[in-house]
Length: 164
Image 1: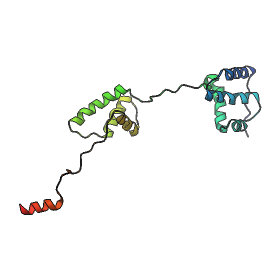
Image 2: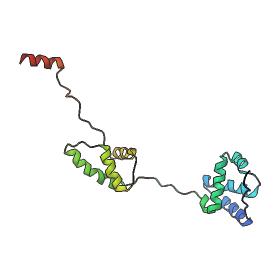
Image 3: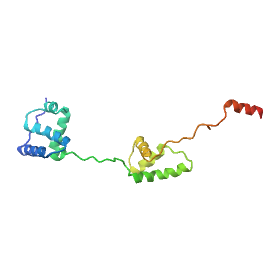
Image 4: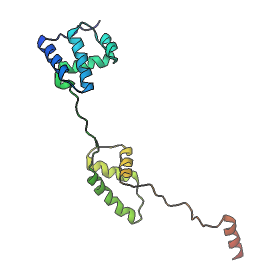
């Protein structure tokens, strides 16, 4: 058996209508329309979802947000870019210590860099985060070659050994 619908007061209905008239953001407007339909009609979540081409649970979620947080909960929050843990300068500083090791001829592994990175940000990060950071700063994978390109063939080496 379904729960009874929450009731909207006259003040809430007026508040939603005014916000809907002033709204310019498309996503925020859709959320306000959903709440307005529920407030002004007796339609259930399934019917509203069909009208606005959303899922039933999504409609219920939006209405729940309104009752929990009011209009502020329905407002679109600006999402900032650069979700990195460290700034560009901090990343350069971190990699500078490894650059000295690399110049001295030591082999560097991503796990070492990841360990140091995690110490700087005080939480665990994925290995892909480290690979993206390395790519951002122009680091690339350089491996020692397995053999010299001008190395003689095995037959030439054996022949040399037999003659000397």
